[in-house]
Image (cartoon, rainbow, N blue to C red; front, top):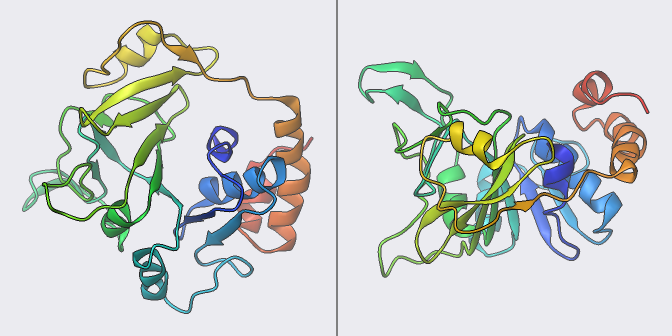
Length: 235
């Protein structure tokens, strides 16, 4: 998943993720190694990649238009681009109470490119309508919003949010999966029109760089060192 996400990191842009974000942190460092040597990376809570004293400083940075890409991990995502990080069930008497967010909803308005991700692709994650709107995929006319591109990356596929129709659509299917499998595991209509692309294959170079250069750097720079040591395989 980190390899697929790393391809969204562009040269000469500022990419960021929040705290407790091992996968996007790994993705950004890999993206810089593979294709974006001049990318600026912000990883909140890290020693070498967090120039801010508080999270509030980071949010001001985004509001000033100084972020290009932000990664979001959502619990639920619906066809309208809304995401949920708060509750499952009734808001006042929830079946599941989740951690919530600190500013992610605002960043969804302030950052031009958003990449959401899920480590599973199931109907419980991709729902017709989220139980709670932690971040809104669309805004009423007249509301200022910088977001121009929203993607969702899962182990099965990549989804793209159509800014004109305001509907989440299937962009590509990863190798080893079929369109039918993605449809079966998605709780809303994916707006399929015509043939769907296959996601470009993960390369040996990407895997090797992740397991050597990126893993070593994460450990040395104390950027999720335990996770890097235990979760990224040896070459």
